[in-house]
Length: 636
Image (cartoon, rainbow, N blue to C red; front, side, top):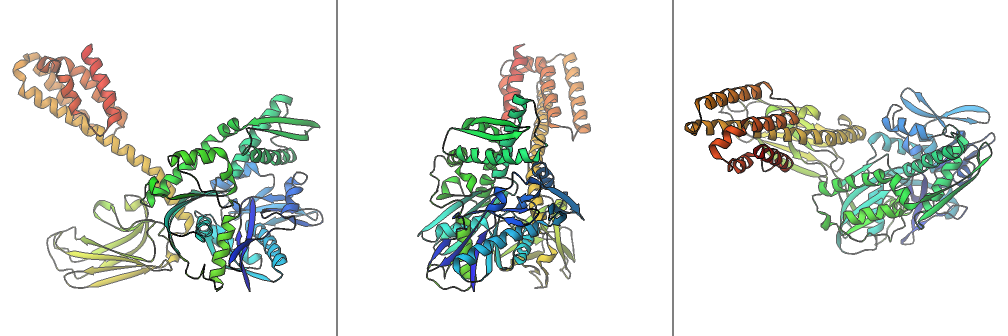
């Protein structure tokens, strides 16, 4: 039986097969090596691929595209709600699941996203069978690296609907790395930058001969060429309104025709500095002509382009590498043809050349075909020793004093793996210990996910910190976690096994990572607030000490004034322990202003430099602000 690799894309799909020691990308009947991921329903038939896309402008309400953005998601997902604004077809909420409503053969029918994707996969299966002349019943299907468990399972279901045995759901960047490294020798670190029609992924891999190790992944399952198209459509719709005073934002047919023209203009702008859009009888018989320059297009999408750089930095950081350690940056996905994307990425890597030797539309399907051949048992010297290594998606650890998360295994650690950490008792003469196991990226366990609990009894009574307990985390190739706690003095052992079904699904994992990024900024702000508060407190006590040591230089009235001021300052600080950073800054400036005359009498002008030395060297932004403030005070 033949096994193929299928890149099930948001806008286009591609199928490839491993034959005669090489990968062959299979073209459809029109001679195109990629097929639009469109499904259309008419009064008489169902259309898939090229035929569906060609009639979309005349039948927008019943032409479904972008189903990959719906698959495995809930209706109330914020991403789904945002996408609803751009789709002409109807989406209904059925028990929390988004269902696509169309009119087929004069009847309203409801389809799950898996069914639409299954229809596209069926089309790819038929294309492969016609080319190969044999039945194709096995496939490796690719998904974005950041797809959650629900989305992956839904994609597997779509394959089943298409009559395929899904050998594996594999990550798109990993598949692209397989295609890249097949005919290349030597060890290297590669970064896969995969920007497609609807999703964006970054993966860092280390290739050592036939050994492919994923170091880290990052990305956004809701960023891609579709979003760039929507910006163009909004621009041209507004241009049409200004010229002809007509709003077409609720005209599904007009928007579909404008979208087709906008997609064409976007592709044209990859090679030329200006593109024209011409749509005959766009609305109310009005012929529309518009122009857009590459510079304006880049400005319209500038924030989206820049948003792709944060995951790149995160992937490199998580891989514990520097930008200079990346040997090759491999571009995958049709949207990487956009010149501005390449410019931003080249600048990010300090002018390093980008690898564009792979066809960005076909690389993922080629890698999937290689993996399909391996899993199907095909023998060839090029692929027989290839090995892929997965990683731990979230950090694993135990709770320590004050609810802190003590990480035993960091995120993106290759599996299988085993790590041991030593912990100790928190109380004197403690005879038992409750060890709680968590996963997550937050510093406090209350914000992470509890996986299980080990109760270790029989610990010999001793002062706190004397007893030593080894906690061992072991993850096997199937992703099953086992945790063992061992008392070093008694050799007493307790263990727990945590299977995948007890853990977070990928949807929860993605949410927790996103939450960690949000709270990361809150944590930074909290640290800065404490720094300013400590700085204010140190300044008050330094002034108090100075006044005490140099009181002979002050009059009795001045001493009483400063004594009362310092008392009030310390009382204010005690009452306002948790106020905003800006309030601490304001108080610091106010105290400097009020006490400047007295302090100048003690030290004269040199106090300015003394005041500078009291400020935190770690907080440069505040340091500059305060320096200007105290100089202004002293000059006055």
